[in-house]
Image 1 (cartoon, rainbow, N blue to C red):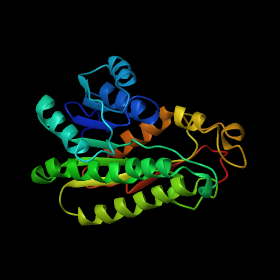
Image 2: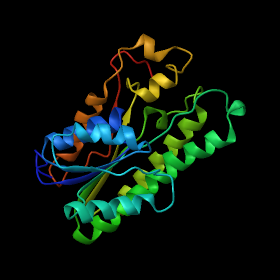
Image 3: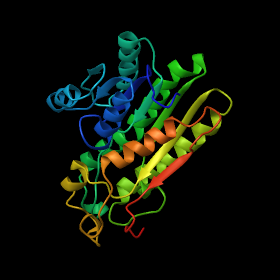
Image 4: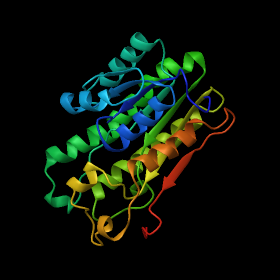
Length: 242
């Protein structure tokens, strides 16, 4: 990719707010055309209106079978190709695992694991034939250690790490880069809705990083020379003890 990403076509899942919207905004600012997706049609369209460059909004549940393939088809039909895929959509669940609703666990696994896997595989269907493209998965520092107040969420992020790193090795020499960005506390609606979950009240005791901080990290990954892959990038608040 070029340093300004001008002319690139990007798909961003979970793009109506938070990290996804920050990444989409930065990519758009740098000249990319965007396909933005999330569950809420109203929030998605409102977010899309603020992107500075060409874009389209496609409401979808990324955990639904076939959803990612349809989004990639939209990108190719609307803008001619797909150069960047940001698999960002995710849901959060904390608390004692025996108190969790089975439906909430199923939704998390469907979104956080299956949704990411089908986003990556759908993007690869376009990128591999042209031997170029970048895929970045939004993971979490929870994928690097078992965090006891969010065991289901942490398990999903461990699964993503295994998937990303295994698939990355399969892609070696094929012209497509795959990596993950793994934030700590980020001040987003997702975190606030969870009440700053955690025994140490991390959201209150750390300054946190912003979605824009994460977006800048992702752009750094995307704009490395083609012979360089940023395998994984952990980004934390300076005072988060984890």
